[in-house]
Length: 416
Image (cartoon, rainbow, N blue to C red):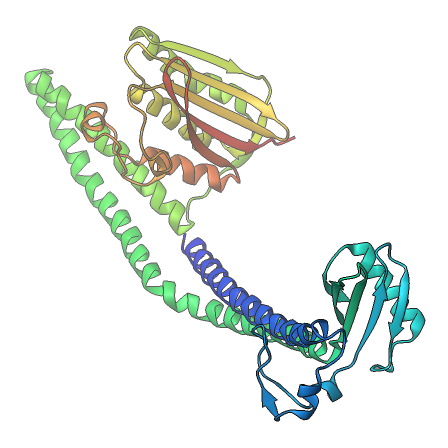
C-alpha cells in the first residue's frame, strides 16, 4: 500500500510539473515564433504598399518614425539590412518579372520555383523554406509575390526551441530525482501510522480471542446446567460473528505485513466453486430465491485452496445478504482467453452509490441493513487482498435489466 501511495505521489507530482513546464515552453516558443514572423510581416507590409520597394521617406527621413496602417516604428537601417526579392505573376501563374537585386543567395531559377510554389498553394501568406512571402493582387490582375529572407530570425527561434526543450528535459530529470528521493520521507509518517494500525489490529485480535474463548466456554457451561435458551443461542451467534471478524482482521493484518503464506498448488477451480456454492444454493432456495450456477468444467488455477475458497464464500455470502426479496443470484465460471473468470451477480432493492468503495475496509453502504444481515464491511476487502496476492483482479459493476443488479467479477490466470 505504501509503495502504491509513493508511486502515486511521484506520478501525480511529475505529471503536474510536466504539464506546467510544457505549457510554459509552448507559450515561450509560440511567442518567440510569432515575434520572428511579425518582424518579417511588418517589412512585407511596407513593401506591399510601395510596389515592392522601401519608401524614400524611410531612407532619407528621421532615424525612426511611424508608418501608416498600424505598422510599428522602423528605422533607416531596415532597407539596407533586409534581404528580399520579388516576382510578378500573371493571373494564370506565368512569371512576368523577377527582381533579385536585393539578395545574393537566390538566383533567377530558384526565385521562379519559389513563386510557382506559392501560386500552386493558393496561400497569400506563409513560408517557403526560410523565406516569408506575401502574395498581393495588383490592380491589373497580376500578382506581386514578395519574399523576405527570415533565416536569421528563424535560426534564433530554432536554437531557442532546442535549448528550451533540452533545459526542460534536464529540469524534469532533476525534479524527478528530487521527488523520488523526497517521496520516501513524505510517505514515512503514513508508513508509521499504518504500522501502528497493523500492530494494533494484530494485538487487539489476539487480545479479543481470549475473552471470546472464555465467553464461549461460559456459555457452554450455562447450557449444560440450564439447557439451551434463546439467550444462550443469541450469545453463541454473536461469538461466532466476532470470531469471524477477528479472523478476517488478523488475515488482513498478515497480508499487509507480508506474513501471509499461501500454499500454492494447481487445483481444479471449477470443482472448488461447485462445492462452495452448493451450501449457498440450498440456503437461498429455501428462502424462495432463484439461484443459478453455470460452471465451465476443468478450469485449473495455481492458488491456495483455502484462500480461494474464502474468496468464493465471501462473494456468495455477500450476495446472499444483500439480494432483494424473492430476488435472484447467479454464479458463472468461464474461460476468457488465458483467465478463469468468476462472476457473482445478485439483484438488489437499492443500488449502492459508491460501488468502488465496497472494497474499502469497514465501509457499509446501508448501516441498518448491514446490522440486520451481520456484516462488518471487511469481507470484500479481504477478498480483494487475496485475489491481488494471486496476481488476479476483482471488480464490481452494476447493470439494470428487468431489475437492478450488482455483479462482482474475479479474474485469475489459468494454470495451463
